Image (cartoon, rainbow, N blue to C red):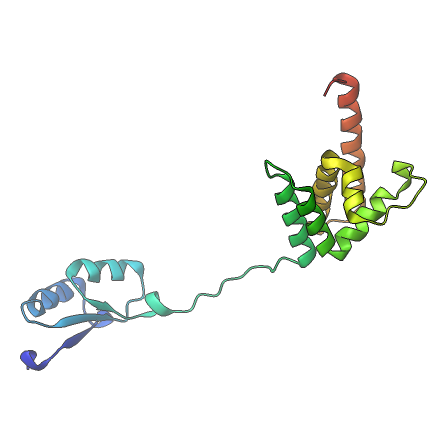
Length: 181
């Protein structure tokens, strides 16, 4: 009946390697397509392919694989976009303003920073563009890095405060040691 057959299925679990090899060699003499069925491992797939099977079926090829991961929160994504924009060779102030403006939390934090006592402003700044311009690229870089470090993990607020104090101390020490930097 082989001249009437188009496809022959070979059940792998039913044959050992020698039997499979002999069967494929015998069937390859006829004009048939060989389908290796119930392939469950990469080794079985490779072996059947090497022996000359044309088609393949089995869990190795189609078993669903569950991929686990975490969805990045919108706020974290905005910070990542901000850092990406800041690291560009040509920094676009309008691009920075746009990224910060799209995220309400970033906008609020930037305005809170620029209007804090640390900057000793007599008038309140209420424009994102003006805040970005007044802070400058270096301060924005520092601010974005600090935000990234504080948002990308779920550590207690006290640890972030301690890291900030240490960073400020290192910055001040570097100014004392190398004032030109």
